[in-house]
Amino acid sequence: MKAPYWERATYTDEIISYFLSCRSMHLQSKALKILVEKREKREQRAFLQSLYRLRKQGFVKATKDDLVFDYKKYMQDKGTSIYFKKEKSLEGVIVMFDIPEVKKKTRDWLRNQLKLWGFVMIQQSVWFGKGRLTKDFKVHLDFLGIKTCVKIFNASQIKV
Image (cartoon, helix red, strand yellow):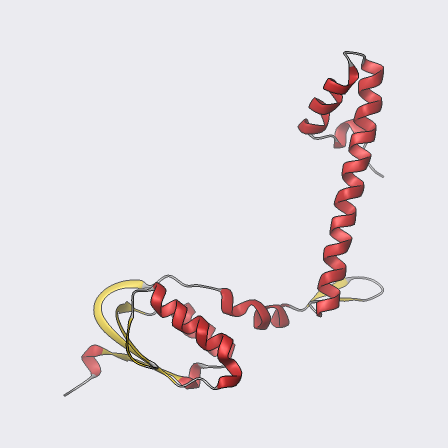
């Protein structure tokens, strides 16, 4: 059972109803009830629209009893917009990658991530920078399916 409208009212609802009431308690309670109902209707409509959009994109599947959120599909679609912090270190790191054209969006994300960390491009797909790469970053590379396409070297491992 729903709580009474005066318990569901926000401070904004109460302030607006007070200004609309001309100091009449009867008018204020009527205005408050109308404001609460309209706000709840707007919120419900926005929720249903969001749910419809997620269902249409394939992120949510509705069954008779419940809703199932497809987290894996969401991460595959939105996963390239995640950025990571770099661990501070004086060690030099070289990142080399050869990501196929099919995964262009993922390749662009990797380039942007490396630029964000202050890495410098040595060649087309070879980047150099200072600092260790986090374990989360490496796990995310695996999740995106490009871990085999990316090679990470510590500068101390390179012998000339």
